[in-house]
Amino acid sequence: MNVHEDAPLLEIRDLRVTFNGPAGPAEAICGIDLALDAGKVLGIVGESGSGKSVTMMAVMQLLPPSAEITGSVKFKGHELIGLPPQEMRKLRGARIGMIFQDPLSAFNPVLTIGEQICEALRLHDRTLSRGGARDRAVELLEMVSIPQPDRRARQFPHEFSGGMRQRAMIAMAIANSPDLLIADEPTTALDVTVQAQILDVLQRLREDLGIGLMFITHDLGVVAGAADEVAVMYSGRIVERGAVDDVFYSSHHPYTRGLLAALPKLGGSDGPLTPIEGTPPSLRNRPPGCAFRPRCHIAIPLCGAAQPALATIANVSTACHLFSHFEAMP
Ligand SMILES: Nc1ncnc2c1ncn2[C@@H]1O[C@H](COP(=O)(O)OP(=O)(O)OP(=O)(O)O)[C@@H](O)[C@H]1O
Ligand code: SF4
Ligand SMILES: [Mg+2]
Image (cartoon, rainbow, N blue to C red):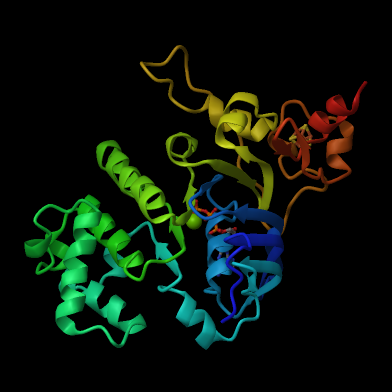
């Protein structure tokens, strides 16, 4: 495959995903644009059903045949949409690694962790000897801070704790030195201390190996410590996007503000947390105009008539009529 080394690591343009089922088509992703450079971390946040995993599966070309995908997903300048499955298989696990929320389901229970990492290594490098793969597997377990990696490599997945399994999965995902790592809720099932350790491992990989990381979570707090850029998704669209600090300190979208208000404050709460009331619309029953309107306390008549587009002011891109309206005033 021809990749262009000077092109952005990942570039998504007007990505749309529609699931065709007996009840008719349902548009899960309604035209999103994203970009990620090598050595950077992009956090994608949003409530359940906002389209985070579908975006990741579209990038990896792992959606079922019922999914109609349009738009463009370029990896180092090379188009992935429409790539023949055998070419995509070569990329997955080699140049693009994946980490899922539930590591237990990703491992084979009857093979040791070491054997499974060796298998991942030899799948993409047939010249690697058994001994060479074993040494590399132990090295990888050490890289993700697994104590006594030599002994641990000979253990089965059920002998690992949840946090260690997650680290072992990261080791497997980076076995072939990928350029891009996509992690879908990698810390959700873990307690806060283990979550911090996993985030630390991912940060080191970015710093030491220059891996670009797309990090999916529903927790804006996790993004604050782990990402350079953040994209906030709501009902299949990006409603706000920018550098983490810019979005945290000057978010404009009422949905992002709601997520921020729902975050526990450091050192104890100075008041009750404010959850966002209501639920997201179903894919087949989105309201006209802005999909957030039924939950928005500051909606104006225009919100029910037209879909707001992303507008960039002071480094933050926001899709909200009210924001564009006030910013446009002299
Ligand atoms: N294979 C599928 N067939 C039909 N609809 C699907 C399919 N996969 C996902 N969807 C729908 O697409 C929408 C987005 O789903 P997605 O899994 O991306 O949400 P998410 O943001 O990852 O949520 P969560 O935080 O719960 O993981 C949902 O409404 C979901 O029901
Ligand atoms: S466009 Fe209107 S409804 Fe949507 S978030 Fe902005 S103010 Fe609220
Ligand atoms: Mg998901």
